[in-house]
Length: 132
Image (cartoon, rainbow, N blue to C red):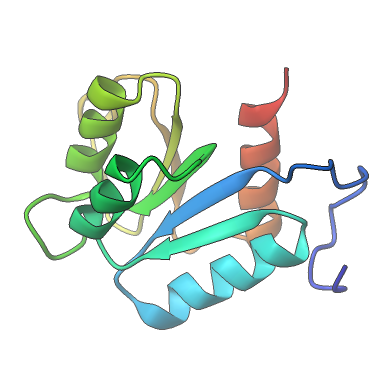
C-alpha cells in the first residue's frame, strides 16, 4: 500500500471492490483513481456518463460509481445516477460537484460529496456504502 491512503486499516479482501470513477477532468480523475488504488480498490476510469454506461453495459463488475455531476456529453452525473438506478438498481452511486445543488436534484439514494473533497473522505464514503 502506498502511504497516500491514510485511512485504510482493514486487510484487502481477496476480491477488491471495484470503483468506476467518472470525471471529465483528467487530473482530478487521475488523482482520485490513484488514491483509491492505493487504498486497495480496483478502479476503472471513464471520461463521462456515455463512456461509463458503455462500461456498465459490457457487464464489467463494478461495486460503486463515483461521478462528477457536471460533464460534457449526452447526460450529466444526475442522468447517469438515474440510469444506474433504473438499469443496475443494486449498484451504489456517489456524485460530486463544486456547484450548489438542491436536495430535490439529489433525491433518490444518491450520496453527494462536495468539491473540493478530501480523498480520505471519499474512501470513507465508499467503505460505508460497501459495509454489510
